[in-house]
Structure formats: structure tokens, C-alpha cells
Image (cartoon, rainbow, N blue to C red; front, side, top):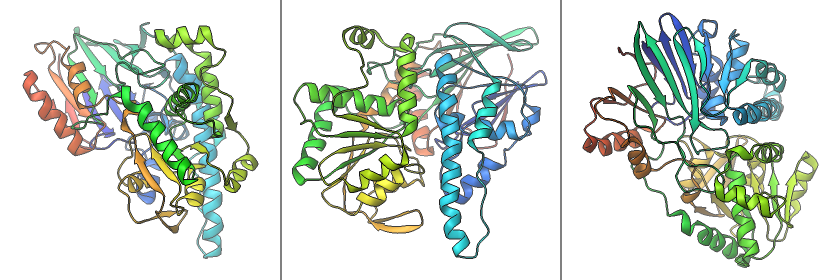
Length: 466
């Protein structure tokens, strides 16, 4: 078997890996690369392999850095199935169309300036229609139900605890009569987090692909996160400002809403308007409501006692552009949760542009920000940042709460990996992390006595045998 690593190695975006097994090619994830605009556009438009050569695709979860380039894959000639869980299929149905719509609108906005400057207009990577067309190729499978996907290859999905529908993927492979088991963590969630079940524990695999987003870093104890969230909200209210929260529409937005609901009920924060400004978040929340089979016991029990765990009196889901624009005129303390999570596209850019230069306001960072994204520049508190090509002074307070992270941290990754039988695990590949994080995880794993731990480079090809 040959493994080619084309994305999501020594970085946290654009995940895609190709397995070649007895002449058959299986693609694991097909994510959008996010980073410097020109580089991103080039890498996403031109795939590093022939899309028509892929026989089957397996998708770990719906986040755009794992699923976001599937419409382009299909545009370039891929005609096979995309295997995923039921909830991932439903989320992709809205997320990929939304991604296409955002690209269309962003290009429209950028082209107005390009035309005025005498430059040629640019085209979107794909449209909402392209995304809708790609959905015809999705085949959803329930957790822990084995599905054959190629000659001698079957897939089984297990709970990853990362976002709704996220999966740890097990591939059972017949390599010329010799069995091989490959486990792909996808993005691994954290044990003990609200809403979703904990990540599944495994004992055996021949090959392991593990993420390393938070290699070398440790999350705050989740038990303190509500207290810190309440402090950030109350401090901003005292200044008379607004709280702007960039958040992924799927998973993070629902967690923040859940936490704000709890704080309001407990009287820890006053009742102020909370706006979820993302049509995708509205639709994603509806998908959450439709998949209670993914909930942990605590959330399932809460659902029996309340009509809606993702709604409360002062919460408003904003759907139209007109409603979104009205938020620019808000003068009272309020909370605006908007996408995208890394501040690279979507309505969050407009809210940042309108609020970033007011020192009364708070930009609340609740998730990982990749290198070369606007979100990372905000985390690093650069004195000025560019939004829609214009320079803005960073005067708003920047507060980071990493306990909300849906990724396992360094300790949790090592703990999860430690359950594997070291004698059987022949190959461990550390993926989906910036190089420093991947190297830190590799050093942390040294004490486990694993046979082979590798951090592949982008484009690297590796052969493994049963």
C-alpha cells in the first residue's frame, strides 16, 4: 500500500491523503487550504492529483478544512462515492453550499475594487450550485456499521467527539491476503465535553494517522470556562461595548450558545441581546436538533426537560443580509457570534471591520487560528490588520478562551494513543498540526516505545506492507 500526504501535514488546513491499494485509490478527506490568499486560491484550484483517478473517498467530518474542496474535486472529474456519517452528510449539504455562496459573494465584493483599479475580475473556486451537485455523490453510513468501499477494503466510522457526525475512521484492508488495519483519527475531540459523546478508544491498529493540532499545548480546565466567559462578557458590558465572537458555524457556535444559556439561567451574566449572525449556523443548529443519536447522556437528559437546548429568550438567529447590516447600528452591549471561525471569510469580517477600532469592544477568540489567517493576527494582537484590503487599527480587547477547543490537547492525544497495542502498531503518522505542534507530540510519544513515528512532509509518499 502506498500513502501520499497532500495536505494537512505540518499545517492544520487542506487535509487530503491518498491511499493506493492494489491499484485502487482512496482519498481521505478533501479540505480547503486556508492561508495567504493567492497561495490558497492556487492550491485549492489545482489539486495535486488527477481527480478522475480516485475510486472512493472517505470523509471524517464536515469542517471545511476537511470537506471544503469536494465540489472542486467533483468539478475536476471525480465521479465516485463520498462515504461519511449521516450527520456529516446533512451538515455538508448546508456547509458546502454556504461555502460556495460565500465565495461568490466575496469575489463579487473584491471584483468591484479590481474593476475600479483596472484589474481583471476573478472567478470563485466553486459556486453553491457546484456544491449542490457534489452532494449527489455522498453515501452516509451509521456509526459502527461496516461498509465495503473497494475491492478488499471496508470502512467503519466511530465517534470522534469533535463535532456532530465527526468520525474516527477504521479501514480494514486485505493486502494480498494479509490483513491491515488503518485508523485515521480525523480531528479528535476531548473527553468530558458537553453535547457529544467522548472519542472512541481503540486497542489495535497496524497504521495510525493522528492529528496534532494542539501538540505541545494544554487546554484550560473546561470546568472553569464558563467563569472566564462570564468575566469577559461582564467586563465588556461595564465598558459599554460589544463582544464579537468568531466561531465555526458547526460545533463551536452551538457550544457557545449552550454556555451563554447556562450563564444567563444562573444569573452569572445579565440578559443582553445575543445574535448568531450566520445563516449556516441557523441551519446547522437545525441539523443538531435532528441528530440526538450523537448526544452524550447529559445532553440527552437535558433534552427531555427542555424544548430547545440551543435557544433562549434573548437569543436571535440572524438570517438575512438586511438583519446583519442592522447590527452595525447597535449601540448597546450585545454579543455577536459569526462565521468564519478563522476570520477568513463571511459576515465576521464585516463585524470586525465595524468594531475592531473601538476600545470598549472585545474580540473573543474561542478556537484555533491557523498561521497566515486574520484570526491568528488577532490572537497575536498585531497593532493593525487588513480587512477587505483596508488597514484597521486593533483597539478592541482580545481575549482568548482555549477551553472551548473541540480538539484534544497534548495530554489528551497521548492518552488516546497510549491505548493502542505498541507491538502491533507498526506505523504512526502525525498529521494536522503546525510543525512545532507535531514535533512536540512526537517527543511526547517517545516514552510509549512506539516502533515508528513520522511527521510526513506535504507531497511525501510512503509505502507500507502487511
